[in-house]
Length: 527
Image 1 (cartoon, helix red, strand yellow):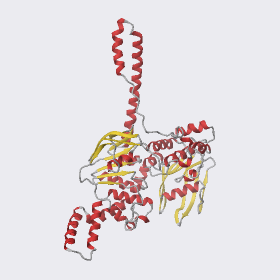
Image 2 (cartoon, one colour; image 1 turned 90 degrees about the vertical axis):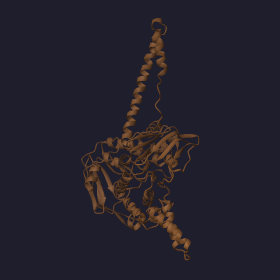
Image 3 (tube, one colour; image 1 turned 135 degrees about the horizontal axis):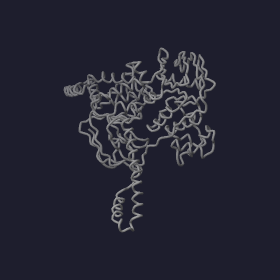
Image 4 (cartoon, helix red, strand yellow; image 1 turned 135 degrees about the vertical axis):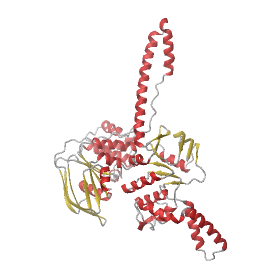
């Protein structure tokens, strides 16, 4: 159990949260949500002891082992993969190294023998003999092949390092697991495996995530960081979202009733306070009026951008025909004779090999050329593309945000561009800062704005939810659902795929699988 008592934290005089009182108990999974900058990751650091709060305390029973997902992908570059995972249980790893050092001594003494015996006993008690087997099972579940278990961490790609660090956090049966964005860089199979692992976990899990499907699957509680407060609610993310909307509406309705009642009472008092026969009623109503206050709704840190894609013209019958496209990149064939035809109502999710999806999108938008094959867009189509890597649009760009957006707007008046930027959460002086200094999430919102201004009737998205918070993901999701044209997209967001796609195309080593279905239906079909 973790007991949080009256915890508060300020940064540079700015209050993040205060008077936080919570209990986290075994057998439950707590999803921590909130706007970017609200303090989610900071709160996890307080729980782990990495940061001291300005006030209050965090109590964890003695001898309780807590495991935390590390964020430094290069911290373990000098260690083998297997060692890195076992380091998730520091004492067990320490015993293993002590044993190795003892047994390598040339002058092994009787005292060394006694020490080795003690270490062997503790090693057995901690499940040391099964440690490598357990570590291997976790690594394989997360998609790290057995050949890579003996490799050095420095030889792995960043996406693989993330998986190894996650395996480290899950290893060794800790009582408490703290995870900050654990599904980043995980494929569908790895996410499913992680969900099953956490559902079976008997300890306490506290997780920060922007993945709505993941939060819905694993969470028993939602911890909401907002209004400079942290509150806990029973249920998964969808239950919290619907409940919070209902509560907000109830509060607005109640305030409206209060305002109407106050106006009625004020009118009564004005009319009858000078009338002796009515004075007692006026006095009683004055007392009632004094008790009534129209409380302002708390100023939530959450802000939802306005995302709406409106095509300038309708689609004709011919949309896109792809014939035998092939492409090799850096010696690896990523597309092998890919063929398909689009219909005017298609919303297609491309899953499987991410590199294949990116290569296909770049070919369809003529960023790169195929090695073989051809494609043809219908004459009525116009395309707008959201690339996975948007750096070319911002790096070395000295334009401020207003001028950057003017490049893509038919209406170049500053008032129009500022209004558009305001709806995408760029307010005050923010539109005047250089485009090249924007954060990842801000760049994504700019790229979405560019697509909205295009008026295209075919939208192509390559991992559009990267760098976005839950509010922006929700707005994008709604915008894509309302779009009447054709969509081609690749994403890790389960809920986005499930709510948008009516057709799934999967890249496999044996070619593509093309099926008209929702995402969940497709996963069931594929077993």
